[in-house]
Image (cartoon, rainbow, N blue to C red):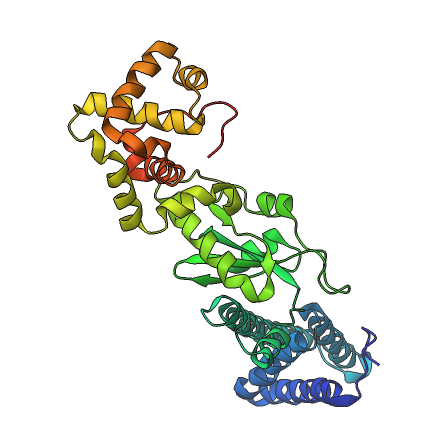
Length: 369
């Protein structure tokens, strides 16, 4: 047994034994004949890699080297060895410099393996997330194989979060709860398992934990959907993030379900602009200032469900003024103002980016869009 309580039997033990034997032989060869340390460094570089693969800390291998160096020093400094002070000093200098070289080689191997492992994890998780958000749902065998490779128990439902930035691993750890992440089209997509996943898996991160983990970032949280509908959650959150970056939606961490109307009207700019143009067309003959006032009044009236008093309060103006404007609007729109479907089209057109620039009105209190 080693001092760290690890056995020298098995493949790992044989590797350590080979390392120690190689180190001793190489030290004697180097000290006596000035031999080359290339092979010995390679052995300890591989031992460092093995330490990481076996889940050990690099300090354990350093301890083995230290113990070995002390044993050699004890042997050469024994009075029976009959070495004078100059010889002892030369041996000490060579021995402890030699140990530093081997420790450095082992540390390099450990870090190389760590980086390779991190790269491999990123690849398998990227493959899993890509399968989840691709247009066509993956076959069960492919999905389960990808999840097993990523060591990620498949939950019943997920939330997909789109975040500004490309530091995917950092963001997944910040969210916690078994979240995995990768970079897709220049932004990070985080797949967050929902509560009710496998009993032995980490507790899922709730909305509050997601918001805390992503503080200071632009991020859009998609709806919680069953696993095979993860693409929908991804598409909504990705589009919402794009609208945040364009200034259409507010910064910070937002929930897509709270902005579905904006997502609907701004999903395809050409359609939204056409809807706004159709809504504003009857006001084309008015002056720009009059057009803005009438569009503002129409949007407030629609939001207030046709109630004149509520519309006047929302616009901070007199009811008679609202009635005067409504007469002009009826002249312009006619029966469209009495048709429920036309009212919906007008409302959506005025809510879109192009319509909103014309109807610059605050949302009436107590009325949501």
